[in-house]
Length: 64
Image 1 (cartoon, rainbow, N blue to C red):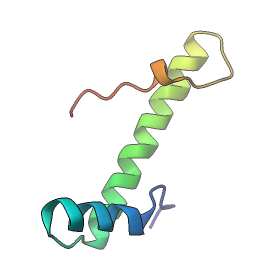
Image 2: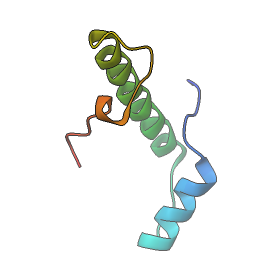
Image 3: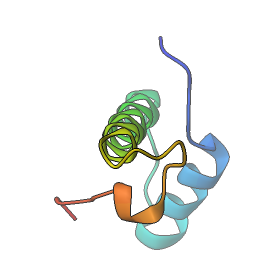
Image 4: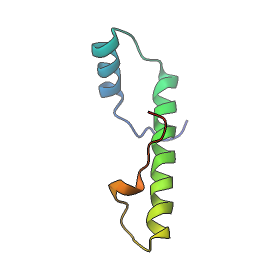
C-alpha cells in the first residue's frame, strides 16, 4: 500500500454525514492515488512555467 495522502477520519465523516454510508479502505487508497496524480500534474505544470512553487492554477480538476 502506498502512502495515504488524505485524512481517513475526515473522509469517512464526510461520507457518513453527507450520505449516511460507510467507507471502505480501498476508497481511501483510490482517493490518495488521485491526490498524488493531481500533485504530479501540478509539479509538471509549475516546472513547465519555470517555477519552483506549485500554485492553485497548476492543479486542474477535470472530472468533478
